[in-house]
Image (tube, rainbow, N blue to C red; front, side):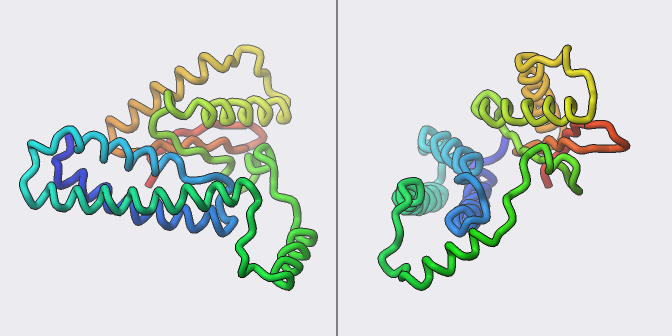
Length: 203
C-alpha cells in the first residue's frame, strides 16, 4: 500500500494532468470530460480525509492545500461543463469569431467512427482503472469489438457482454497488480485481416 506522502504526490501529479485534460476538453480536443482522472483524485482525497489522525502536521497541511485546490478547480470546471453542455457562449466570443468557427466546422472532415479507428495505427483505445465503475466504457469497447469483428467477417456468436465484462475486470485487476499501475489500456486493432483485442499497461 502506498504511503501517505506517495499518495499526496500522486494527487499533485493527477491534478496537473486533470487541468491539462480539462483544457483539452473545453478546447474541443477531447470528446468527454476526464472523469477517470477526476474519480482517481476523489478516491485519494476521500481516503485520506478518514486518515487525518495518521498524518503529521506537514502532511495535513499539504493535504488540506491539495483538497482546497481541487475543490476550487472542481467548482470552476462544473460551471464550465454546464455551460458547454447547454451550448452557452462566452460574451466576449464575438460574431466574427463565431462565423470563423462555423466555417471551420463546415469544412472539417467528419470524425472517424470507432470501427474506422480499429483499422488505423494504434487502433481504437480505451483506458480502464475500475471496470465496475466504468460500465459504459466497457460496453462501448465490447460493441466496437463485435462490430469490427463482424465487419471483418469473423464469428461473434459466442461473445456476450457479461463474459466480456468479466474478462475486462479480471484482466485489469491482474495487470494493475502485476505492474503497480493505475490504468490498463485496451486496444482493438486490425492485424493481417483479423481483429485483435490487446491489453497493456498505460505508460
